[in-house]
Length: 101
Image (tube, rainbow, N blue to C red; front, side, top):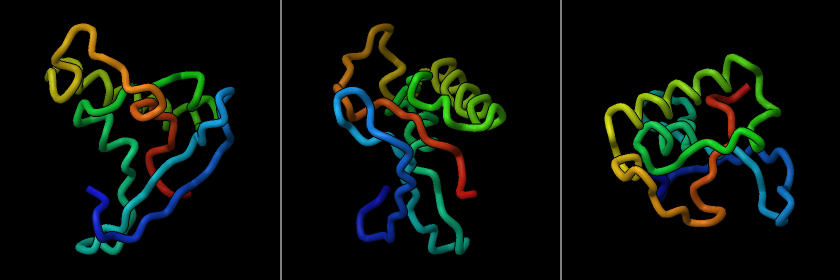
């Protein structure tokens, strides 16, 4: 998804373990726009939301991320196929917004 493309990172803060809480965007060459990697990972079932890490977002953005995660679970895509997917600490916790401001 990211390989060889321009990347933009919106940093929000560090969590209690010193990990960066951020939104990652990649350049969409075809639309001259930025694609939210965090939201794409959620909708593909490769990441899940950690509510305490996205409380800085507007309510409508939180709602959108929640809808994307619910859809992924209903469709059982990616890691959501498993009832108890193994967590990869710090790599699959998403807390970014769904688009550039």
